[in-house]
Image 1 (cartoon, rainbow, N blue to C red):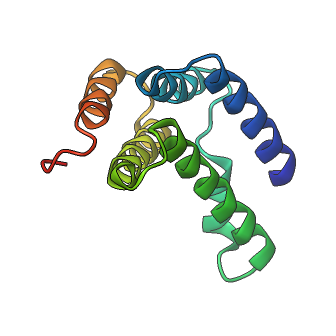
Image 2 (cartoon, rainbow, N blue to C red):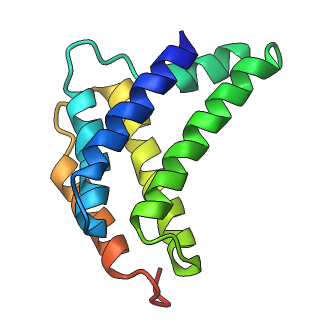
Length: 134
């Protein structure tokens, strides 16, 4: 099940990103894809995080799939930002915000969550890549 979900996720996110050429648009596509997922009636949080929690120390195979999945997302963010050394910290920060959004919406739901404000923080990160204030 995890492998099927991973394949679906990768194809879906890759297709959404491919439409855009500008880094901010690509990052927006990633975040918007997730926001759409959060708003889906079937949203129950991240299957990969739940699997890691349940199978940690019990299944190396499952833990490896989960790690690869999360690494793949961060790598896509890094690539969307330009894939240079100056993008490393920004990609980590954006990944942290995204994972925080997943966690918060899983626990508290989406009511009252200001997705647009989260996007603005992410855009600030994108705009400041290469600056010393990251």
